[in-house]
Image (spheres, one colour):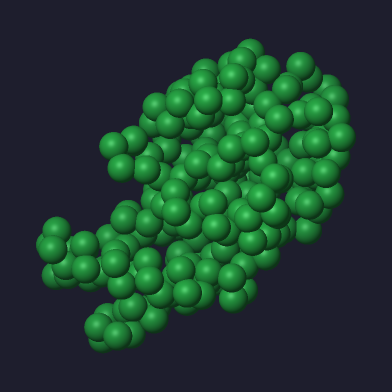
Amino acid sequence: MIKTILFDLDGTLLNTIDDLADAANWVCTQHGWPTFPVETYKHFVGNGIPKLVERFSPENARTPEQLAATLAEFSARYDAHKEDKTAPYPGILELLAALKVEGVQTAVFSNKADAFCGKIIEHYFGSDSFSLVRGSRPGVPTKPDPAGVYSLMADLGADPQSTLFVGDSDVDILTGHNAGLPALGVLWGFRGEAELTAAGADALAAKPEDILTYLHQH
């Protein structure tokens, strides 16, 4: 029986891609670099903001010093505009309310910078919506390394036997499996069924209420 669900953030709970793409393309435009369509950014994201910055930076702008400067520039722009177009996916608020009624503990584990995660979750869901919200922190490997999941589960007091990982990309499925957890892939996010199936998702959800169905069956 599932008693704890660990959710990915971007592409799973919130559709953040337009604000991420806008901030990245704004930085590119400032430097005269090529910009990219939103569809491309769906494949640039997922491994943390430093990796996103590296992916949209031209090869001749990838020295450690330049990447650090670009990361600071992107972070400031994104922080100022991260709520312009971002919104919860349809059905997510209802799902979270239903999970709370059923006594299922929920937490967020993201590769997005930790400082952004807390602010964005509080803005869209309120301060008491999740038991814990955790993003990428210095010294902790990003997903799909399971170290951050182990730490989060320890802080939650979550039992691996009754914990489910939910996300929208192969990174999320691999994260769950690397931590010894079942991993459910959502089809409304940035990647899609083929990638999630290839990564070995234990189940797929076409809409948020499918997650409740999965819970009732397990």
